[in-house]
Length: 435
Image (tube, rainbow, N blue to C red; front, top):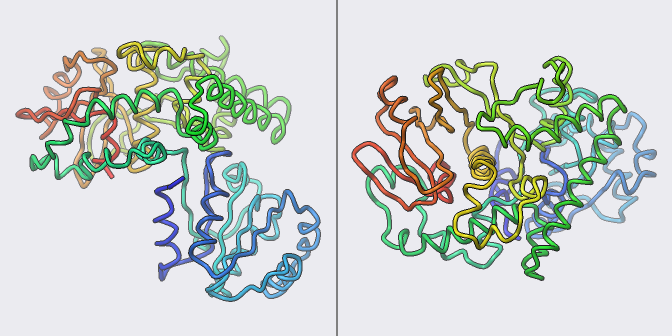
């Protein structure tokens, strides 16, 4: 499958600031797949070391070795010659070898002619506290499930993407292609599919081969079970229970009109300090997205963060599986966009937009709320996300009266439209125009 992150890997290889690369992201999103493809296409050869599958190599490298010795032993073990700038060294499941993780510092300082990439299951958790290495000695890239754009490409419908504006300036200057409207309905139909299937590579690959939604749901549930097993495998029994409680409460929170995360909803006596570590575990594992409320839409937004926040999953398909979304929703009108109080729509928007900008939301005591606040190119843009076709913008009017922004945005399944001050952007195009 074509992944947009591939271009970033090319940039990393060519960069004069290249350091050993750590690719972060949740399990089962295709990190190993894309790094192997990158190695095969962009280097003369590569050495692949999986420290979980080759535990004996962990023992071999468990000593305090120099970089020369590490390269020598890996070359002997794999039978591959390691040539500076021509061989890619790929450390997979690197968290299983603390010595190698720490050695990335010395690859950077003394042997940067060697190109090194690494990935690992739950690597974010390892890096957040159990193992440390000097800041500034590695490059990071974050990877996510397939975006809607990547999903469309995987379906072989890439031609439809050419009709979507690629930046916000195209919309501001009225340079929207006429075929953006011609293919609108087709893109909405593919968006319905994406809401059910989601962006997990294994799920998409199986759907492309079998076109069977029961198989889709089966694989999604297996992936969820894998994550649940990780809770107990990589934490204490008490902490695993709390992580599971936070995880299970996410659909409950998103099913409410007010989707703000409340710890007492997990347990009547629950307090933030009881579940903060559990929530951070899910964040470090790349399984959830945390969106903060802001008090004022001023630059920089992160200076106006309030204690309130919302939690979403990294993949809308997994959210549908957790709520047992019926497959018939795909063909019944616009049910997918209003189902579950519009939570699928919000989850989709946040998982998409998080890949390009840091999103926030705003609310006030009068119950007005703006689902998405974006800081982009030095301006603040309020976006009211609509789950249905009703485009009344009550909250936007309240926001407008309070803050008088230059432009108000609305995103729904309606097509592009530019009024005097309100611009409508289809849900499927929102992340593309804010790239």
